[in-house]
Amino acid sequence: MPHRRLADIVILSCAISAGIHAALVPEHFDEGIGPGTGFVVSAVLLVGLAVVLTRRPSPLALAAAAAVFAGLLGAYALAVTTGLPVLHPETETVDGLALFTKGVEALGLVGALIGLGRPFPLFHSQPKGARS
Image 1: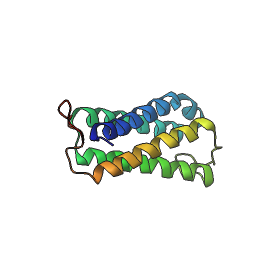
Image 2 (image 1 turned 30 degrees about the vertical axis):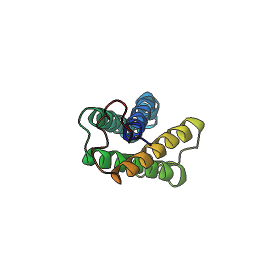
Image 3 (image 1 turned 135 degrees about the vertical axis):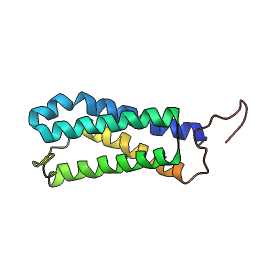
């Protein structure tokens, strides 16, 4: 896969997940301060990563994206199985939007991990006609 497309997958995954988390903030604040705050923090981190990966990409930013995606996937796994102490103590039911979001995040995680395994600069554009 050309380098730019791989970077775009990670950036797009951050943006989609950020939008979904942001849209669900009010609903999660209805459940409590912990869940609402968790969704705000998630959305802010994801937006920040999308911006940084678009404007000033680096291996550190890519590693941060991988860590955030892994954290979100792990947190969701706990939320639907045992609950998350303080943030979301009751177990959450699995729904279609959550599964879609986790699929997007898993794709972003895989893209970030693949990108970390490739020589940098992953994000620099190729000259016209060049192949990666």
